[in-house]
Image (cartoon, rainbow, N blue to C red):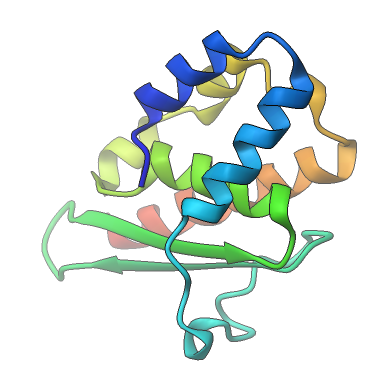
Length: 137
């Protein structure tokens, strides 16, 4: 998976939003496939226009490092899942709770270039990740 710092740097080199959308789609293509058995009603992010699934993994310890897997049936949304996972996956539950993805989205100018429906889906994904991190904390 591409580190978030690299994604931010790559966005800085792309001047046109058409190129940035292509890059988002490429990030989605690079996202590891999610096992179909994990695509359950429980792992589905409710309220997203496209189908989005998120699964978390953590050890049973205080303030665990949480890794996330995600997938979507839509190319751009799958790329957005990849960006969200780059921000949050592999961090401690307490860090996830404190991390504001809006800062990253602001750096790359993402939110103003998404439809209202996609922006809402992105917020739902982030809320789901933060809720799961809170449950582990």
